[in-house]
Length: 358
Image (cartoon, rainbow, N blue to C red; front, side, top):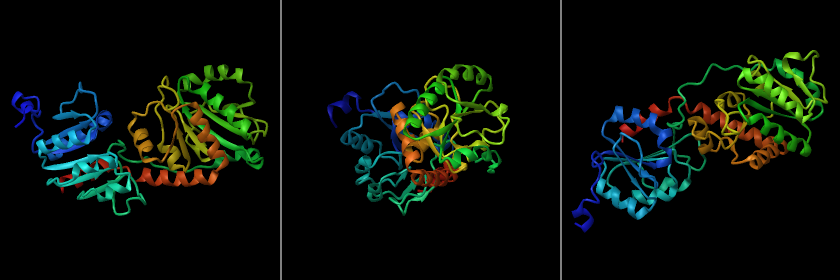
């Protein structure tokens, strides 16, 4: 026994020894709480080994925060002597932690081929992954998706864009935008049409904001057709912006677009709730900005790589340009996203059942 043990500095918090131990990044705790609480209720003695530098963590689940140092983590793991080990969403660099462990282990949300040789009893993925062909497709238990809504694709409204399609114009849908996001949408669109001419469909989420947003948009001097005031069969070829003020066509317009930029993700000021489900069900590639990545489904989609994630305005533009130039790439991503989405409902219960059986 070392001096630190004698003085009590190495003493473990109550509830860790012999537990079902979940090892995860401390930064994922808030997003993971609903899953962890349900897991604890169903399998009982559960504790957390949180990897990070933050010490003041508000969590009623027994836990220990340890710096991301493999040697230190291994020492703590040996001291805890867990009954089972759950590696949750970690990278393959943490695989050495499982070497010589007697407790059975399961790796949840694996994303790297090297994890296949970590010695886990079970490995799960959020959707089918060619890098881990023998892993179990359970969905991501942190996605927070209970069930998918009833869905049907109505393309009737798309006839309005006949002239745009005949003119080989691309259509980008800025769907459900919130505060401070419309200005960014116009700036991105202006950059994109200098690369290749297209049309922007713009639909603020909050109907009360539609009129003031429209008045503010006049400064951009782009030819605009307002959905509720369209008096012809087709949107004229000279139109640059199709502005939507009514909630009724918001879902159907996804069928008309080449790709979707998710409102609620472009600016931190936005209070709009991001909607990834509707565009994915419509088979559209989704671009998400840097804001509100703590939203569970957004975070899960970014982790799974089924959306194009941008950290700033330049990356948002780069993603748009890629989809404009390479529509086949967008189609491939959209197919992956839809397959991922359909794997998510019920993921938490599937993973809890798997953990309880190891």
